Amino acid sequence: KEFHFFDKKSKIKLLKIIRSKIKNNFKINLNDFVSDFFDQLNFNMIHKLNTPIDLKLNWKQVREMDNNYLFTIGGHGHNHLSFGSLNNSQLKNEITKSLKLFKKKINKRLIHYSYPEGQKVDYNNFVIKFLKESGIKICPSAISGINNIHSDFFNLKRIQFT
Image (cartoon, rainbow, N blue to C red; front, side, top):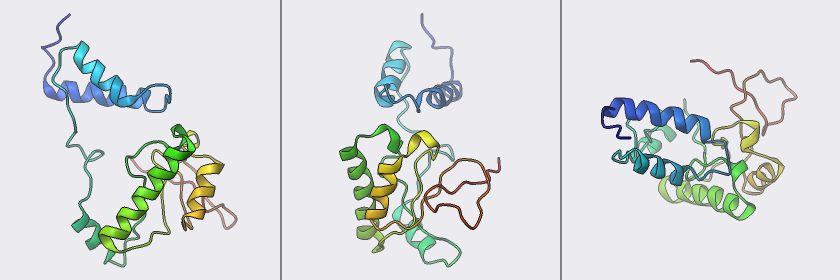
């Protein structure tokens, strides 16, 4: 019943595996699930990971990148929630809050965005419509594939390197 033999590295690995399996199941509240999971196993809760996928830029770093012509700054949601899992009100809040923060923190009105997670289940026509109404001009997916001159700017595919 007790799982104290897991070291922190093993716990983090287990958390990543579980997170990858349930994050697209919109019937599960991910935060509640993880909290309950740690409670049941009598683990100390891990609130954040210091892995490359979990580290975030600070506003100073964002400004530095924005001032470099090699980078284009875009939004990605406020809480990195799948837009497909949100109701219309939540979606509008998630996008609007992120756009307002960029305006406040780096004085920039964004025209580029990227869907959190970026798979077909993570966005829909309402999401695209609201992004367009919010001034966004392009929002690529994370769906693997190749684009052409006729590709829709809100359904662009990516070639992923691992």
